[in-house]
Length: 533
View 1: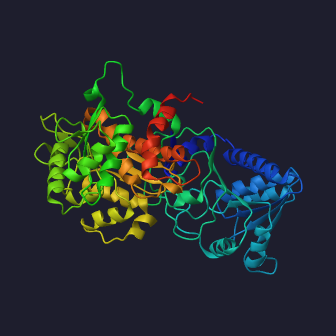
View 2: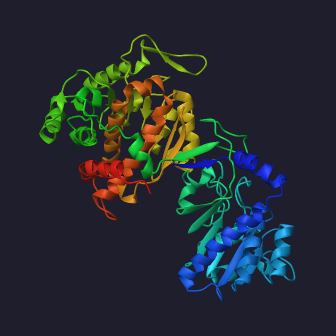
View 3: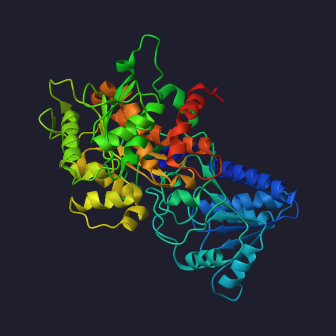
């Protein structure tokens, strides 16, 4: 599992090392220069003679860039530092001067390059190093730095960009993109990853991130905690393939279909029977012990024709999936949705304590529930953490609008973490916000999964995710209710497998939701049997 941590935790880890005289900047610069040299050898064939331009700002990030520039110059690269701002890190500047690095100002003045000159120099480089702003920065790029980046973004061609810590100008703590950002081909996170490297939309500017290990002893996170306003989110996690074998519910020889988990599905209408077929199919093929379908005769017939192992009608269920393809105005399906929500403890079977902790009553029959699409409108004001909402951006805007926020889809897309967290706070539910990078927020913390290829933005893909998540919740239903922090991890696990299944279905090419369902068994088998690497 990958963990990205807030700047306050990184600073706490750095303080004792700096007090002891550990040269953290020099260590970081050595690693940056070594990785840059690898890039140059791979792209140009050699370091010697390669043209490197390093953009530096006034802080420690610029200091890392200056020290790395000095090291690359000593390896024979033709290095120029472009200074943005009135000052730079003094120690780094001395190191660059000693190595013969040319340091040029980008702004106005008799010896300055001027922004057009700086842009031409940067665009002609074999490697462009972005060391303008690091993890301590807040807000957008400003002044000459912002104007230079806009010029680079307007160019038809850019060199390979290596970012130090983060692509400058992203929301380090929340993943926003408040202004111009130069996308990085490679980002080297020195000591720890910042949350903005994993959260959308900023994560799209850093598709390839590598950790530079500085041997920091980062203090443990408190799940769900945040730092101060300038520090942002405390921690973001991302599950990896190696996390799947220990988390996926693999049946034991003694298990029967009920112990493996029964998923109840309320999905589809006569107009949209396909949503029911896909949701049920995903639950069946991801390993549910049994799937029950509750709904009108017409979608039920389509479900049974596609999946004869499905049991129609109500009965014993460990987890519910509600809403795919459901019209909130459909009286019969609306009734089924309300009944299932009652089994989630949202009526008389549970309470929300003033402490903010859900506690089930003596009724042990409470069920986890996935609430998607048409069932979102049926939610009560407060939910439980074992209720997982799975909206896309437009649906989340509507859900929050019903709770007093004035939002449109674009607002959600600009700040996905903020609004997923807001929905979690307002409803008490775990929130899985679907997108190219899926954000999951709940009492167990925040997860961000980015396995889904762009081809997965297709009709019915969300129905498949809902059914897949239903299987996971059914298999671990009692734990999910007793330990709600588990739910956010299971939701992230579902998002990971969902994305991997799309690649399995047709690597590098288009997929349909039906192809996704068919790919689930072999995707899961591959993930749970993979050897540790």
